[in-house]
Image (cartoon, rainbow, N blue to C red; front, side):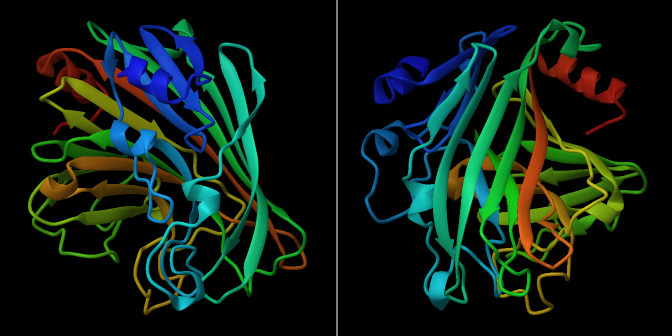
Amino acid sequence: MPDKLRKIDPNVLELACKNGTIFVSNKLQGRIFAEINGTFVHNFIEELAANPDPVNFNNIGGNSLWPAPEGGDFAYNYPDHGDWQVQSGINSVPTETLENTGKRAVVSKRIKLRNRNGKEIEMDFTREIEVFDDKDFWNVGNLSCTGYRTVDKLTVIGKCSKDDFLLSAWSLEQLPGAEGITAFGKCCGPAEGCINDDFYGDTSSRVTYNGDVFTFALGGPKRLQIAIKVAARPVIIGSLDRNRNILVLRTTPAQDKGIYFNIADNDQKDGPYSAEDMFSVFNGSQELNFHELETIAPMQVDADGNIIGSELHSTTLICQGSTEDLEKYLKDSGITL
């Protein structure tokens, strides 16, 4: 799979990391991909990446940066109250390399987006990616691990009032498979009540709680999504793929300053502030056969109510090993599935 990615983007950036490589593709809009011990970690639709659709969304996988919200009055995916779409700034505009040391890369582009109310916003879209080094791996036992940190920034150009726009940096880590995969999260307190299920479909039969941990059984016939509220003080989300013997963990710190809001892809009848989402998990079901682990940042606003932008700090840890060793690592970390 790395060779297929290199063929599509001969200039793909390659950041060497313990046990693997982190790839950053400017041609593929700044998406991030990972490989560990020869296994390609992310979902990757090679044919679509090589022959992108000029109109429709090119959902090719990887770790992508999006603007939230997706739905509601300020949605970027329903411009001018039209049908769902992904605008060219996200769907097709490439990034450019600002820095590449072999361990750290920075890519960026300037884009314009239109929200549901027909108002246009311009911003700088920047991703800083840095691979883990040996000291970043802790208590992993018999597992092989690799990983990286990202700082994703959406910085507004000009004056845009929060009365006219919402804006959040939202990182979607897309991974192959859904059926039989267990997603989960851990909170600082009781997990029950931590979930915003204001998306689509009924997740109640697939979500369970055990103290400060929730689990989300992926797969099934319907697409489903949940978000995790910042008030629940979530500390980590992840997914365990027992078929591939891959565990992926994602973190982002809660930010004291800034405005969290509801990212749900619907009309948000109770308004955009009806939830404060910090993490999200998307279940692509048997139909799409992928899932996503998502981190979300708050919106930053100045004293006059103008949006500064949004800055998201995330880590992604990828572990490979036997099912028993992966489950033991989780249990030792206070997560029993």
